[in-house]
Length: 247
Ligand code: ATP
Image (cartoon, rainbow, N blue to C red; front, side, top):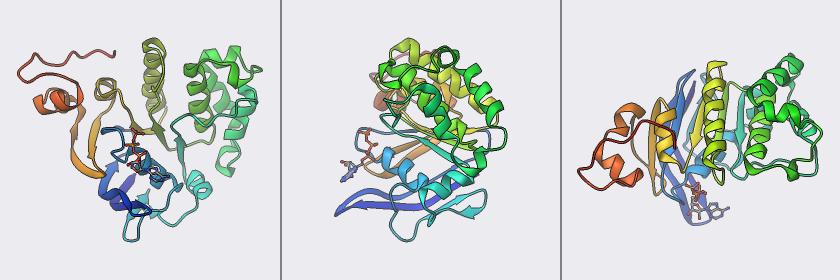
Protein backbone atom coordinates (compact mmCIF):
# COMPACT_ATOMS: atom_id res chain seq x y z
CA UNK A 1 0.00 0.00 0.00
CA UNK A 2 2.97 2.32 0.59
CA UNK A 3 5.93 2.39 -1.77
CA UNK A 4 8.97 4.59 -1.19
CA UNK A 5 11.84 4.72 -3.71
CA UNK A 6 14.95 6.90 -3.97
CA UNK A 7 14.03 9.04 -0.98
CA UNK A 8 16.70 11.60 -0.12
CA UNK A 9 16.52 14.57 2.19
CA UNK A 10 18.94 17.37 2.99
CA UNK A 11 18.91 19.69 6.00
CA UNK A 12 21.01 22.45 4.44
CA UNK A 13 24.17 20.65 3.36
CA UNK A 14 23.64 17.71 5.69
CA UNK A 15 22.20 14.68 3.89
CA UNK A 16 19.88 12.95 6.37
CA UNK A 17 18.49 10.39 3.89
CA UNK A 18 20.14 8.93 0.80
CA UNK A 19 18.11 6.90 -1.71
CA UNK A 20 16.02 5.11 0.88
CA UNK A 21 13.51 2.54 -0.33
CA UNK A 22 10.82 0.68 1.56
CA UNK A 23 7.39 -0.80 1.14
CA UNK A 24 4.51 -1.80 3.36
CA UNK A 25 1.62 -4.05 2.43
CA UNK A 26 -1.89 -3.75 3.79
CA UNK A 27 -2.22 -5.41 7.19
CA UNK A 28 1.51 -5.39 7.96
CA UNK A 29 3.39 -4.04 10.93
CA UNK A 30 6.79 -2.88 9.69
CA UNK A 31 9.53 -1.56 11.98
CA UNK A 32 12.47 0.66 11.11
CA UNK A 33 15.56 0.15 13.24
CA UNK A 34 18.61 2.38 13.30
CA UNK A 35 20.94 4.25 15.61
CA UNK A 36 20.30 7.79 16.86
CA UNK A 37 20.57 10.22 13.98
CA UNK A 38 20.21 7.49 11.32
CA UNK A 39 17.36 9.41 9.70
CA UNK A 40 14.36 7.46 10.96
CA UNK A 41 12.29 10.47 12.05
CA UNK A 42 13.12 12.26 8.80
CA UNK A 43 11.87 9.22 6.89
CA UNK A 44 8.50 9.25 8.68
CA UNK A 45 8.20 13.03 8.32
CA UNK A 46 8.90 12.74 4.58
CA UNK A 47 6.10 10.20 4.15
CA UNK A 48 3.73 12.41 6.20
CA UNK A 49 4.62 15.50 4.13
CA UNK A 50 6.20 17.40 7.02
CA UNK A 51 9.59 17.65 5.33
CA UNK A 52 10.04 17.87 1.57
CA UNK A 53 12.26 15.16 0.02
CA UNK A 54 14.85 15.98 -2.63
CA UNK A 55 13.57 15.74 -6.23
CA UNK A 56 13.55 12.27 -7.73
CA UNK A 57 11.84 10.49 -4.85
CA UNK A 58 8.80 8.29 -5.36
CA UNK A 59 6.28 8.05 -2.53
CA UNK A 60 3.12 6.20 -3.57
CA UNK A 61 0.17 5.32 -1.41
CA UNK A 62 -2.47 2.94 -2.76
CA UNK A 63 -0.93 3.39 -6.19
CA UNK A 64 -1.06 7.21 -6.24
CA UNK A 65 1.81 9.62 -5.75
CA UNK A 66 1.65 11.58 -2.49
CA UNK A 67 5.13 13.05 -2.92
CA UNK A 68 3.94 16.57 -3.78
CA UNK A 69 0.95 16.68 -1.43
CA UNK A 70 0.82 18.97 1.61
CA UNK A 71 0.60 17.22 5.00
CA UNK A 72 -3.14 17.79 5.53
CA UNK A 73 -3.99 16.14 2.19
CA UNK A 74 -1.78 13.18 3.05
CA UNK A 75 -3.91 12.77 6.21
CA UNK A 76 -6.98 12.84 3.94
CA UNK A 77 -5.50 9.94 1.93
CA UNK A 78 -5.36 7.90 5.15
CA UNK A 79 -1.87 8.31 6.62
CA UNK A 80 -1.60 9.51 10.24
CA UNK A 81 1.65 10.29 12.07
CA UNK A 82 2.15 9.99 15.82
CA UNK A 83 5.26 12.18 16.12
CA UNK A 84 8.20 11.72 18.46
CA UNK A 85 7.31 13.61 21.64
CA UNK A 86 3.60 12.93 20.92
CA UNK A 87 2.52 16.45 19.92
CA UNK A 88 -0.50 16.42 22.22
CA UNK A 89 -2.12 19.65 23.45
CA UNK A 90 -1.34 19.64 27.17
CA UNK A 91 -3.84 22.29 28.21
CA UNK A 92 -6.71 20.54 26.45
CA UNK A 93 -8.57 17.56 27.85
CA UNK A 94 -8.35 14.01 26.55
CA UNK A 95 -11.76 14.44 24.89
CA UNK A 96 -10.67 17.67 23.17
CA UNK A 97 -7.41 16.14 21.92
CA UNK A 98 -9.32 13.19 20.48
CA UNK A 99 -11.88 15.49 18.85
CA UNK A 100 -9.08 17.42 17.13
CA UNK A 101 -7.98 14.18 15.49
CA UNK A 102 -11.38 13.94 13.82
CA UNK A 103 -10.92 17.23 11.94
CA UNK A 104 -10.10 15.70 8.49
CA UNK A 105 -13.07 15.18 6.16
CA UNK A 106 -12.36 11.42 5.98
CA UNK A 107 -12.91 11.23 9.75
CA UNK A 108 -16.45 12.63 9.87
CA UNK A 109 -18.43 9.49 8.98
CA UNK A 110 -18.43 7.03 11.84
CA UNK A 111 -16.76 9.39 14.31
CA UNK A 112 -18.74 8.22 17.34
CA UNK A 113 -18.07 4.53 16.59
CA UNK A 114 -14.41 5.24 16.11
CA UNK A 115 -14.20 7.04 19.44
CA UNK A 116 -15.91 4.11 21.16
CA UNK A 117 -13.38 1.68 19.65
CA UNK A 118 -10.44 3.86 20.74
CA UNK A 119 -11.79 4.00 24.29
CA UNK A 120 -12.09 0.20 24.24
CA UNK A 121 -8.49 0.00 23.09
CA UNK A 122 -7.32 2.37 25.83
CA UNK A 123 -9.78 2.08 28.75
CA UNK A 124 -7.61 4.47 30.77
CA UNK A 125 -8.63 7.26 28.42
CA UNK A 126 -12.31 6.49 28.95
CA UNK A 127 -11.83 7.12 32.67
CA UNK A 128 -10.08 10.45 32.08
CA UNK A 129 -11.91 12.17 29.27
CA UNK A 130 -12.10 15.52 31.10
CA UNK A 131 -8.51 15.46 32.46
CA UNK A 132 -5.97 17.97 31.09
CA UNK A 133 -3.46 15.96 29.09
CA UNK A 134 -0.41 17.68 30.64
CA UNK A 135 -1.34 16.12 34.01
CA UNK A 136 -1.18 12.58 32.59
CA UNK A 137 1.75 10.16 32.65
CA UNK A 138 3.96 9.76 29.60
CA UNK A 139 2.31 6.46 28.74
CA UNK A 140 -1.16 7.90 29.02
CA UNK A 141 -0.14 10.84 26.83
CA UNK A 142 1.16 8.35 24.26
CA UNK A 143 -2.27 6.68 24.30
CA UNK A 144 -3.88 10.09 23.69
CA UNK A 145 -1.49 10.70 20.77
CA UNK A 146 -2.24 7.30 19.21
CA UNK A 147 -5.96 7.76 19.88
CA UNK A 148 -5.94 11.17 18.24
CA UNK A 149 -4.19 9.77 15.15
CA UNK A 150 -6.73 6.92 14.97
CA UNK A 151 -9.60 9.45 15.12
CA UNK A 152 -8.51 10.59 11.62
CA UNK A 153 -9.65 7.18 10.31
CA UNK A 154 -6.24 6.17 8.91
CA UNK A 155 -5.34 3.21 6.73
CA UNK A 156 -1.69 3.52 7.75
CA UNK A 157 -0.39 4.67 11.13
CA UNK A 158 3.18 6.03 11.35
CA UNK A 159 4.65 5.97 14.87
CA UNK A 160 7.88 7.66 15.89
CA UNK A 161 9.38 6.08 19.03
CA UNK A 162 6.09 5.23 20.76
CA UNK A 163 7.78 3.61 23.76
CA UNK A 164 10.33 6.37 24.41
CA UNK A 165 10.37 7.27 28.12
CA UNK A 166 7.65 4.77 29.04
CA UNK A 167 7.83 2.22 31.83
CA UNK A 168 8.13 -1.41 30.65
CA UNK A 169 4.51 -1.99 31.70
CA UNK A 170 3.12 0.93 29.70
CA UNK A 171 5.38 0.09 26.75
CA UNK A 172 3.85 -3.37 26.71
CA UNK A 173 0.37 -1.86 26.80
CA UNK A 174 1.19 0.41 23.85
CA UNK A 175 2.71 -2.47 21.84
CA UNK A 176 -0.30 -4.66 22.60
CA UNK A 177 -2.55 -1.86 21.34
CA UNK A 178 -0.60 -1.77 18.06
CA UNK A 179 -1.39 -5.45 17.46
CA UNK A 180 -5.08 -4.72 18.06
CA UNK A 181 -4.92 -1.68 15.77
CA UNK A 182 -3.56 -3.90 12.99
CA UNK A 183 -6.31 -6.45 13.70
CA UNK A 184 -8.77 -3.59 13.13
CA UNK A 185 -7.43 -3.15 9.59
CA UNK A 186 -4.87 -0.35 10.06
CA UNK A 187 -1.31 -1.01 8.85
CA UNK A 188 1.55 0.20 11.06
CA UNK A 189 4.99 1.62 10.22
CA UNK A 190 6.98 2.21 13.35
CA UNK A 191 10.34 3.64 14.34
CA UNK A 192 11.54 2.28 17.67
CA UNK A 193 14.60 2.42 19.86
CA UNK A 194 13.45 -0.77 21.58
CA UNK A 195 14.78 -3.20 18.97
CA UNK A 196 13.76 -6.29 20.89
CA UNK A 197 10.13 -5.20 21.24
CA UNK A 198 10.05 -4.14 17.56
CA UNK A 199 11.36 -7.50 16.41
CA UNK A 200 8.74 -9.25 18.53
CA UNK A 201 5.93 -7.06 17.23
CA UNK A 202 6.70 -6.47 13.56
CA UNK A 203 6.20 -8.70 10.53
CA UNK A 204 9.14 -7.14 8.70
CA UNK A 205 12.02 -4.85 9.58
CA UNK A 206 14.15 -2.33 7.67
CA UNK A 207 17.56 -1.30 8.95
CA UNK A 208 18.67 2.29 8.34
CA UNK A 209 22.28 3.35 8.87
CA UNK A 210 23.52 6.89 8.26
CA UNK A 211 20.47 7.69 6.14
CA UNK A 212 20.79 4.62 3.92
CA UNK A 213 19.10 1.22 3.68
CA UNK A 214 21.27 -1.30 5.50
CA UNK A 215 19.13 -4.43 5.22
CA UNK A 216 15.60 -5.74 5.56
CA UNK A 217 13.82 -8.99 6.23
CA UNK A 218 11.23 -10.89 8.17
CA UNK A 219 11.36 -9.95 11.84
CA UNK A 220 11.23 -13.61 12.91
CA UNK A 221 14.37 -14.38 10.88
CA UNK A 222 16.21 -11.20 11.83
CA UNK A 223 15.68 -11.88 15.52
CA UNK A 224 17.85 -14.98 15.20
CA UNK A 225 20.51 -13.41 12.99
CA UNK A 226 23.73 -13.17 15.04
CA UNK A 227 24.75 -9.90 13.33
CA UNK A 228 21.40 -8.31 14.21
CA UNK A 229 21.66 -9.63 17.74
CA UNK A 230 25.11 -8.10 18.09
CA UNK A 231 24.31 -4.74 16.49
CA UNK A 232 20.75 -4.15 17.71
CA UNK A 233 20.10 -6.44 20.66
CA UNK A 234 23.37 -5.84 22.51
CA UNK A 235 24.48 -9.46 22.33
CA UNK A 236 28.07 -10.59 22.17
CA UNK A 237 29.04 -12.94 19.34
CA UNK A 238 28.20 -16.66 19.76
CA UNK A 239 25.56 -16.30 22.44
CA UNK A 240 22.26 -18.09 22.83
CA UNK A 241 19.27 -17.04 20.68
CA UNK A 242 17.30 -13.94 21.65
CA UNK A 243 14.39 -14.50 24.00
CA UNK A 244 11.00 -14.20 22.36
CA UNK A 245 9.24 -12.09 24.94
CA UNK A 246 8.58 -8.36 25.08
CA UNK A 247 10.75 -6.54 27.65
P1 ATP B 1 16.82 9.76 16.75
O1 ATP B 1 16.64 8.30 16.95
O2 ATP B 1 17.96 10.32 17.56
O3 ATP B 1 15.55 10.56 16.85
P2 ATP B 1 16.66 9.63 13.85
O4 ATP B 1 17.17 8.36 13.28
O5 ATP B 1 15.20 9.78 13.96
O6 ATP B 1 17.36 9.92 15.24
P3 ATP B 1 16.60 12.14 12.41
O7 ATP B 1 15.95 12.87 13.53
O8 ATP B 1 15.81 11.82 11.21
O9 ATP B 1 17.26 10.78 12.96
O10 ATP B 1 17.90 12.96 12.01
C1 ATP B 1 18.76 12.53 10.94
C2 ATP B 1 19.91 13.52 10.84
O11 ATP B 1 19.42 14.79 10.41
C3 ATP B 1 20.64 13.78 12.17
O12 ATP B 1 22.01 13.91 11.88
C4 ATP B 1 20.05 15.08 12.65
O13 ATP B 1 21.00 15.80 13.43
C5 ATP B 1 19.73 15.80 11.35
N1 ATP B 1 18.57 16.68 11.51
C6 ATP B 1 17.32 16.31 11.90
N2 ATP B 1 16.48 17.36 11.90
C7 ATP B 1 17.20 18.44 11.52
C8 ATP B 1 16.91 19.83 11.31
N3 ATP B 1 15.69 20.31 11.49
N4 ATP B 1 17.93 20.63 10.92
C9 ATP B 1 19.17 20.14 10.70
N5 ATP B 1 19.51 18.84 10.85
C10 ATP B 1 18.56 18.00 11.26
